[in-house]
Amino acid sequence: MPAFEFIWDESESGNVAHLAEHSVTPEEAAYVVKHAESRTTSRTSGLPIVFGFTPSQRYLMVVYEVVADDTVYVYTGYDVPPGTRAR
Image 1: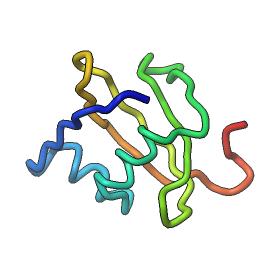
Image 2 (image 1 turned 30 degrees about the vertical axis):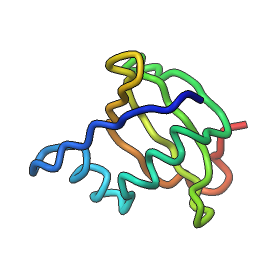
Image 3 (image 1 turned 45 degrees about the vertical axis):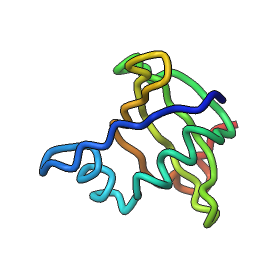
């Protein structure tokens, strides 16, 4: 995957706070976007979804949008329960 810049909104309602609600750091979400094991598209939002492992071996799902050629905005990310992982 090409090098991306990530937009991190640290406001109370921004994506950093939303990730934190799921105990996911921006670094973990960015890593999964860059090193995805599988990719698909959300049936509800039409946004890209990636699945993959973090360096600490958490298996996450991350929803994001490419807002420019090299810029990504992560909407959310969370742990994928065992048994429901993407194939």
